[in-house]
Length: 465
Image 1 (cartoon, rainbow, N blue to C red):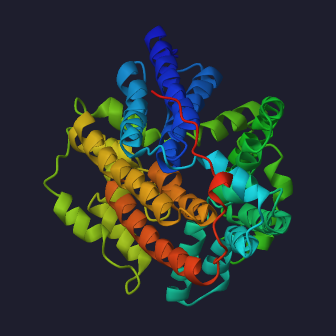
Image 2 (image 1 turned 180 degrees about the vertical axis):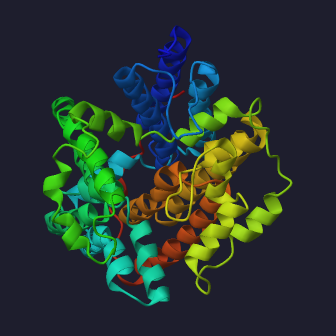
């Protein structure tokens, strides 16, 4: 077994330290750049998951598939320090868009929790139902265009539990509705074999609540959450096993599949115990295409350049409303567009089982570090500019600004971890246009409460740096 080398451990520790400093910088001094902070936070977590995985396996060779087993010792600095490129780009763009007159996010949350805003809890209650919208759209509705509309709402509301957690004290009804949605959605998620729908909404909500606690309580809560790591990742691996065993084939039989929970906590058919399942659960948190692309290109897999970029841009922006979604996805995989580009690196993907090929892998596969800077810089400038524009547009209604930013955070954090540049660009523009327009209309009709007096909103205290 090829154990992780000293160079790999050192490079990973250095990457984690760099990303940690960047996240802290966003937390302390760039609170008006939530979207860009989400980029840095994602890659900090990636360093943490990788370190935990190496500790558990004790091997630098990753068995991703029968024809794909990269050795991280071959390119230790590329695969680890490459995880800092987008956070560095994000912090540079954050500095460009930070404005001292914009109130910090935590100050806005304090204002929101001090003064109850009429109608805002109703908006949070709508967000709280977002967890079950996926199942309504994919299982219970059979009209394609309606299904896509509901699924689109689900994607928009995917990270809104974070906002509900931030406002749980002042708006408890929304938190209660979210709790009911978690129970219903959790049962259906077990039936669908979805780890993300089962755990991520709770994780986002818990993060929001955690940010409202005192410094001492944050420490105790963080220590307590460590106790949940083993059961969460163990269950994550078991869900994957049950989903793949084909016991119940029809997605409509979600409740029947959820009834197999007893099998989730037992030993797997391959005789794996708690440790093996826990390790596999941690492995699923790592976006392997980011590490493989950084390690394989350009030596083993040449850069693909930008010759087909125009064709991919045109293809990825086709509407799927009037064509079969599976046919569209199958064609994208065959032409190695979007997620299909992962095939260049040996990932086994199909319509029924694709792998993430996000912005970092997308940019590096085209032109190395300059491709990442180009793609990441373009998106970071758009994220930073949108956030500054949103805060300026809703300067007198910070609650709407926060709600809209949390919706767009699904692009800067969640979608950025799965899809490449073109999809993220399309998704961000569509979400910003739709929800920005709806929120602006709501600010003129529903949320017409006057702004707090100037003395109630002092300028944020940002350190010079």
